[in-house]
Length: 462
Image (cartoon, rainbow, N blue to C red; front, side, top):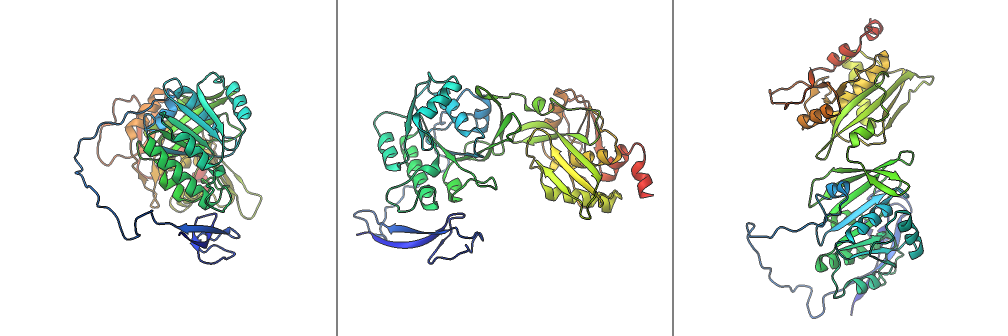
């Protein structure tokens, strides 16, 4: 007979303890430890020490190439690595109302023309999903729709003789396994529900989408092991005040990571954006100080965005440092390097930095563009409007090389830019045939001299 016992699990990080405590020792969260019942079960007719021998094979064995299911939405297929792999589990998370359900409903509607697709909602009634489908003009798609939260019922419905191609579970936090006493959304329920659904998907060979809620920090709610269990983790990003959304792959076993897909939110759902650089630079004003165009890389795609900075005298004893779309720690490092190495002091000024359009930049190659925007705002000297900037700044004031420079320059040339501020090449590698004037920056002080056209900083330092 199965032996039952009680354990205490933190609902924030999933750590398990033998007794209750007010504060979790693993993550430091308060009042997140909940009592849960667990069972120790051994397989029927098999002891805990028993097992069967595994059949090992060579690494060089012949394996047929797995066909991918192409959705026809180019931006979505790009993020997934070229299409959906049969038997894969994909976890997609994002803020409430960002468009996760809208995107997946459009995806299964596209795939319904070539296979069997199922959409199971645990948050909305069937009529509510039908209203969204009518708004998206996909109500005629042959998508099997159901509203359920019991994992036992879902497994019984999916484990039939007919073949399924794609199944969407919206969302995993609403699912529950009736063998556990905890409420839906707890660590034990999320882990057990996902494990049962993923096991069935790999056994039956259909692609499984799991929609996940996010915390206030932007991370997927529930146990961290959930992201390890799935094959692909996608984050749907965007600001409510902007009309476009970004789908980012942070984990992908079948394709590149950090790949992005850009969508525009319209009254008929999400429309893909084939040229995101043109979208991010659509409202750019080239003759304004405090702005620089950064040539960045998102996965394998070059993307050009505008970095804006504003430096103003601070009325407070402690100046403010506000950053949107970039790392605040790197901004502090750049201001320190400008002060200590270049003599440009920002100690008594408020500094505001913004990546226009709502895109979040993660790579250090944006250091030089942010420094150019800061210097331009401080000197009231616009950066040349036909210039792109990229490069990493070190603590010794040196400008370091970054990867994929040729792809960045080609994207800039395609959009009409004619000059680039970039790190000095240590090795004279070829930069392709991009018709750009390359201005190599070895030290950050060189950039200060180029942008300090009216000598205002030199007068201040003097």
